[in-house]
Length: 73
Image (tube, rainbow, N blue to C red):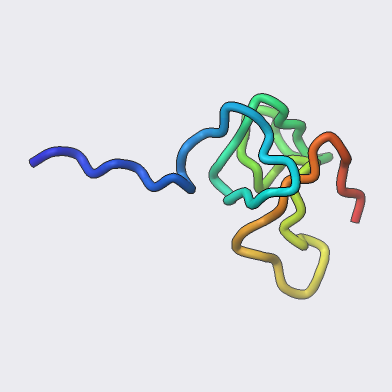
């Protein structure tokens, strides 16, 4: 049986999706790790430019890429 194609949300990005949606497992060439994250964990969830509302009571399942701006909250 042929292998199922990966979902688009699982695919690596070829460039930042500025002001667009990003999923936790995605990554792009502009990945910059958040403070305290291992730099080899190259996923949007751990990127300084992605906003998943990690410091709010409830994190988002789908984040927003704010590259080249950095999210500080």
